[in-house]
Image 1 (tube, helix red, strand yellow):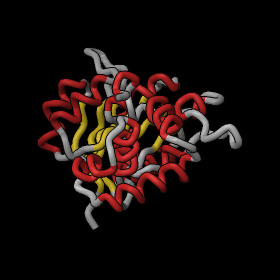
Image 2 (cartoon, helix red, strand yellow):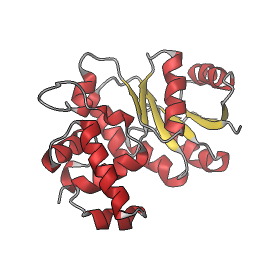
Image 3 (cartoon, one colour):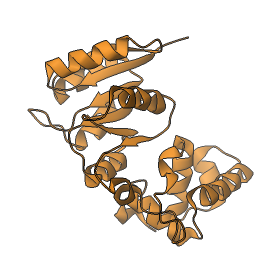
Image 4 (tube, helix red, strand yellow):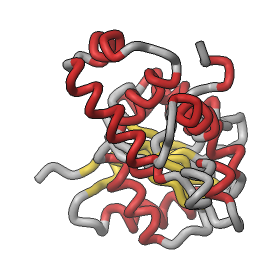
Length: 221
């Protein structure tokens, strides 16, 4: 079994060393590179060919959520897992809108980080933030009846693509053409999304897509 290749981006050497030891101790993953600045990561990540890049949002010389897009531009096959001190739903929404697949605060347990890497490597979304009510602020509620957070974090990458396309107003045929799917498959995705997310109509879907960062506020048709 091939191991998940992880590239670490953080300016704190001791933290990187600890995370490296933790990851290399796992049977299914290994650290293939590391960087102390975003510029070093942009230079080094492509050659390392990582499956997952952990990215700190606050580093000397700059990073921030824009660093997500810059890394994805040079390491297109990698998925970005934000590992940061910022426990703020606004950061999560923006990071996800920029293309991040996961978000974990540094105060999380070691097991959460490992779980996040595994989830992101498999194409899933993983979010772990600790502040009270934070998940409601990130993902909104599923419906007036439940009042609970929408399970959008459980969606696969393809489900998120269909969600964004539907929210933008594309027809089933257009979505099928864009994603190389059959119309029947798109219809199945749409029905499953509505049921999975507890949505009643496309207006609910659009609201959820914007709140979750799947669709930017200026992208509505």
